[in-house]
Amino acid sequence: MQGKMAIVGDGESITVFKAAGVSAFPAEDEAAAKEIIRKIAKEYKIIFITEELAVPLAQFLKRFDEEPYPVILGVPSKNGSSGYAKDQLKSAMERALGVDILFN
Image (cartoon, rainbow, N blue to C red; front, side, top):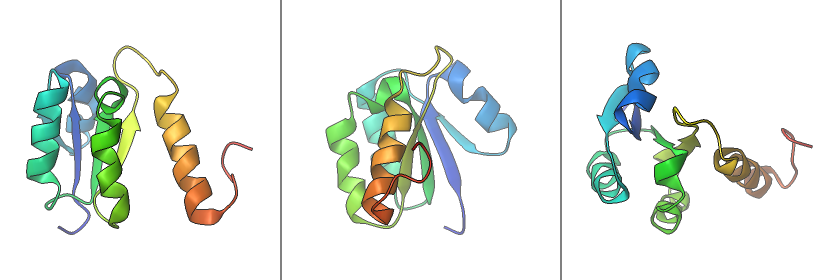
């Protein structure tokens, strides 16, 4: 599992990650994304997921906060950002460090 990264999202949004050598897993809906994440969670250290899939799966994704890996990060999709990923990253940084060093 040495440094492996994956992206889960709609086909168009994951293309640029695929071009950069990140393992890409297309998922058109939340159910498919949830199943993919369950299958790949032990194999990948970092899993990116598009915001459109991350928002409805927020409760499911919280279970991964208890372990060091995988780190699951929301990223904007082809439709742009809703701000969800930024808010999640800010919250995680504040939990880990006790202060907001990125967005303050």
